[in-house]
Image 1: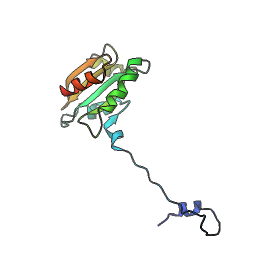
Image 2: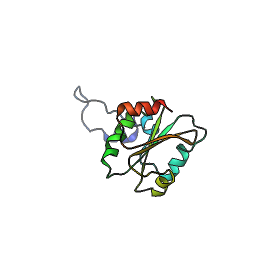
Image 3: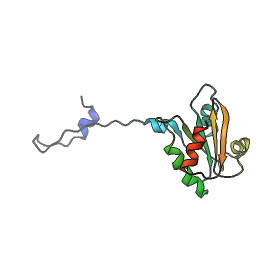
Length: 140
């Protein structure tokens, strides 16, 4: 059944073979957007990374907009995380949340910290290639 808004949007013309029915579209969020927490704030960080009841590890990518290696590393991390994988990804801008970066001893960029069951399990500093990322994930 068409809604009144869709009916009102139809052109006023004689019915004929050239007219196509107006179809209402619906939009929804994909699961990927729910498993990638991009540009997370401190509240989102606490809820997901520090969640002791979640067995699914989350990789926290500490980055800055001006950091060129960060721009290359984040898409590589995205390709290994998400609903189809065993890992989630969260990015945190160190310029926006310097206290959070200091708490986890981020001294160089990019820094990736892996959390599992609310605790730090492993971390690496600097750019890593595809093979090194796979090795890092296997250690979790």
